[in-house]
Image 1 (cartoon, one colour):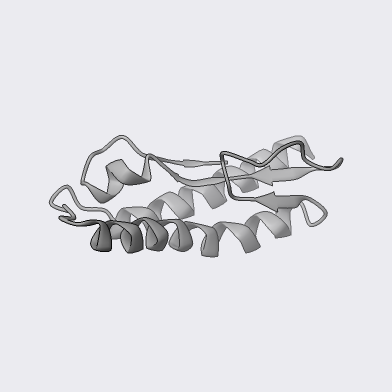
Image 2: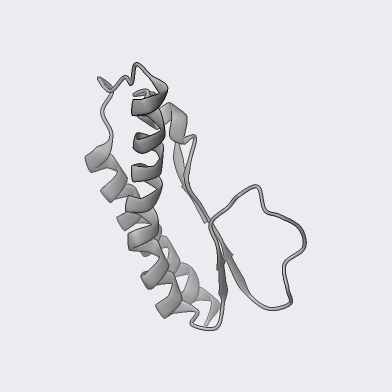
Length: 102
């Protein structure tokens, strides 16, 4: 079961990464906060929209938290803890050091 969970999770993360690559450009540069915030939110949303249903199918009883900073202890049970686009600011600015964190 662990191997199939790992395989399915890896596949979902790769699909999320592929989706993010369609949004990413080394030429991308936002010039203001009014451009930056929507770009960050759109990147996170694009990844969460793909990952959340796929991961819920893998572990239906697991909780979901896509806030890598958290807000205290989690209740007992399994959890998906997601940083949709780690280094999102880097991605928005066209830098290569970003990731999909699961």
